[in-house]
Picture: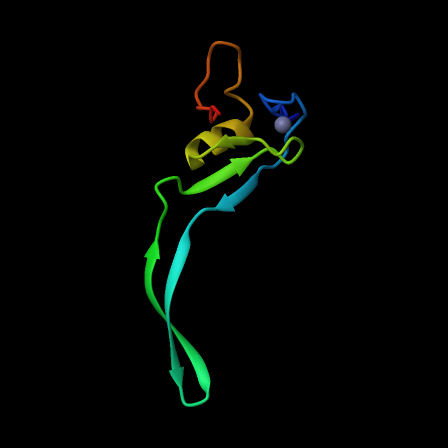
Amino acid sequence: MKTKIPKCPKCGEEVKMLIANENNAVTYKAYMNNEDIEYDEIDSITSPKGTIFSCPHCDKKLFNDEDDAKGFLLGSKIEKGNKFYKVVEK
Ligand SMILES: [Zn+2]
């Protein structure tokens, strides 16, 4: 079975995988313990944007939603006028 390879909506290149960039930051407490600096995790701050998925060819941000990225990589949902996913608009 031949899989349809999705094309980047920005540059038109075939995209077999996306670059996922975790936008989450972890904040630590840093304190001295004897001679060493120690880190304690305070909180995981999840950015409202979450993971950013970008095109490996043109580096443009495409999705900020995992479901959108999945739909895109599955390749079946990119027919014209039938967009199941939301491309991140600049
Ligand atoms: Zn691209």
